[in-house]
Length: 306
Ligand code: PAF
Image (cartoon, rainbow, N blue to C red; front, side, top):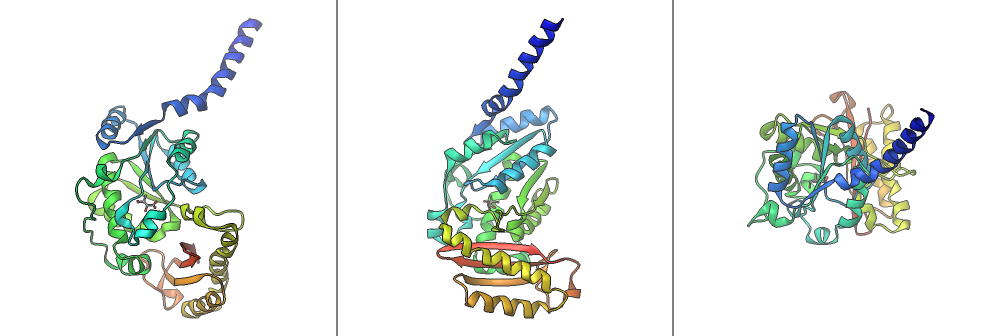
């Protein structure tokens, strides 16, 4: 009996050690939409719940937290990696966007990802690399919508294509791209009302810099300078009781003038609809949004004020 227990323990230990390796082997990689759709159909026939995490690769802890969140709530998790050309309004930005496919696949092997979708541009856009048109109202006219014309049409186009192909139960987005989250919700309300859209908190490094694939393009000295964004947002949060939104924005604009960063915009808006606030009592929840250039790299961040 003792011998049987010892043998059982030895085997189960091997199984525990072998599990991550086994999971990595079982992670499926699709480059064609048709293959992925067939696999999803199979999952759905088995009544499995599917979570989806869309990414443009250069994966960091923020993406992996979304994948693990999705794995904790679903039976299968699909992660897409695709640098979507239609959401870049600046060709240099598209050309310089970090592409780290092999490393990304390795990282996903030790996450809760069940399948990776790695389409090429042809696969998603066939003949014409062009956005469809979505009615995004005010969301397309302020902040990122204003400063990156066409960006959200491109985001909505590609996310809708992914939803058409994968049709997950729930899709996971980071709140760092808060305006994008609202754009996706709006698109999904119309075209995929059954898919739940969830936003998760921004992951930051130990000093407070929001994790972003674009941080790969920053030098170490620039990473330190970039902290000015988070510091100003924290300062704004402390001032809510004492200053009007316009005064806070004015002070932040002045702070950036004497900093190495180039401020593109600072906005304080209603967290529900992103309408800029003149007075605090206009909203139940408010957020501050900043876009700034650190050298050549454009960074965005936002924070809940209340
Ligand atoms: O947030 C991103 O990485 C992209 O905008 C998304 C949602 C994957 C669409 O290309």
